[in-house]
Image 1 (tube, one colour):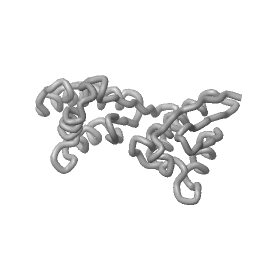
Image 2 (tube, rainbow, N blue to C red; image 1 turned 180 degrees about the vertical axis):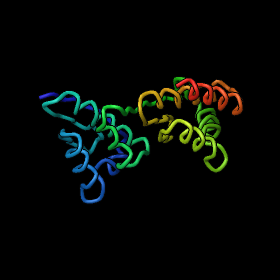
Image 3 (cartoon, rainbow, N blue to C red; image 1 turned 120 degrees about the vertical axis):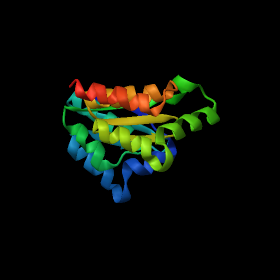
Length: 170
């Protein structure tokens, strides 16, 4: 039996359990692993298969970052991955700086985030100081590159030109 423990914010436990345990049951069924969720936010994930534990861990992380159950279930497919960018690693722990960069990534009415999602065929969620990107491996890398360029202060036109060039080179 392979086991792994993760810790999520207590305020996000309800998202992983879902109404009447629906989300937890679907995650366990879809990923072939068991979830034990404790009140302090620690989650025990176990399965006979290590890959199932890994995938379910990624799915839980995606849900706690704001991705829906339907979206994280795509992680059942080996072609999909979840990448999380920690903004504190990039901009430090200053809450004003984190909020400024998050606003820049989202854009007015969510425009910038939607453009990146559409161009890269990914789903992106921002929660707290973390950004979750879910999609096929290469698509996630392209979205991550675009986000990193924005975090480095590049203007949007440059970011989208670089992204378009990467997509043409596929």
